[in-house]
Image 1 (spheres, rainbow, N blue to C red):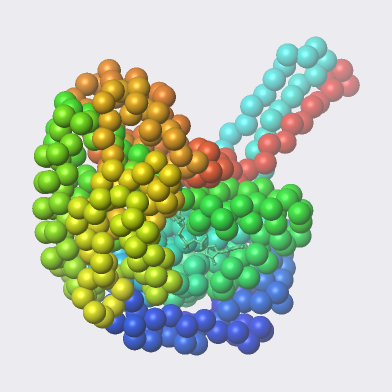
Image 2 (image 1 turned 90 degrees about the vertical axis):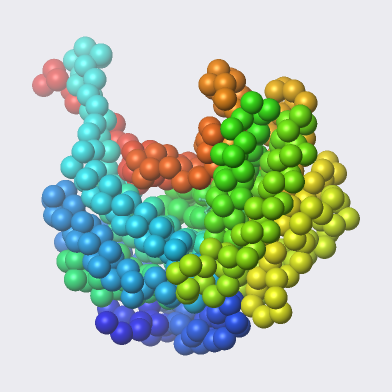
Length: 481
Ligand code: NAD
């Protein structure tokens, strides 16, 4: 299996008609990874959509649920089999340490297998409440679907959007992030080998322009987007202005973590150091806004500082299996986070970090800011890097108020020994996901994942994720005839 740099349309690797190419650089040392990655223009997107529509109406529509399930399981097996060949592309393209790419690939394979089990379990409802009439509600595939992914776990977004789409009987076009297209682009051979008919799964690369072409396309029925709030709003706007395609949005976060005085401190420390620094803090659900009860704050911050400094020592070449902390994804991401560090030094007390690590590659020292001002940018905006802000609180009410004082609502974390308090507080938190006594983030593939407020729209994962790819149809039968 070689290196593929072309678009994957209608089960073939093809050159982009646009003639445009994307370059990717290794954030570990700025070396060139590839400068020949084909980027889709309008004609390419149109070709993919036409093939997707033809497949949706053609052979794919005649497949039984069982056949879809077999092909999906085969694809999962093939991705697993070739994972060690493909994973290094993520590491080279965005610096994700090898130990995490393993997690990303395993999780993606689990998602595909989970949804492969759903193909023959979509049921409907029937009603006989109106005399002379029998009513059926059935669930049909939504049609041609597109997915747009962020770069921090490219394959997870392919699977989280594509697998429920296929299970529902839809066809699927995926656009990976321009920062990390290569790993996903290698899937074409596996898609063919798994037996999917042409046009059922396609991959088009490109940046925001290509994403916008998908979001505004008149013949795409649904789009699922993972990325920033800014771009997510654009996608929804384009969807509304074109054909009102269905939209699912998985957007950013600034997730609060509340650590009460009765919490198991060692557990809280592990979750706010090791788990927070996973993927160099470039995780949408990172507990980046932490609130600690004032009675334990001093000791907690002092010990967290020690842990952050220890984890800084575990940074380095991300291809090395022992490396825990990689660089930030690229120069743009690095400049953005460095900008926040400079601003943050004026807005809060710097406990540790706050600077670049080393003088090559886009490494940043794990950073703790304490007591940010209420309107501080580092406290209000998503940084998406190894930077945590900590404030203290006195009462449960204050903790809840602080936690909810944000436009985001993706994840939240509660650390306490009291199950009563945990459930009481969880009920009042405005967030799509609440974790108690853990900040390890991602739950099982069977669980809904997504946010409230400006963190998103709809859910992915689990049965709820599948339902997003189905349209309800109400059929009424006159039983008098
Ligand atoms: P981004 O919004 O810059 O880009 C995400 C994707 O959208 C890329 O593929 C990009 O090419 C595309 N895009 C950008 N502008 C577009 C437009 N106008 N129309 C259509 N497509 C467009 O985000 P990013 O830097 O890749 O990822 C980081 C962000 O993603 C963070 O905010 C993070 O919190 C969020 N994220 C959310 C989740 C989640 O599940 N909620 C998961 C991971 C990342």
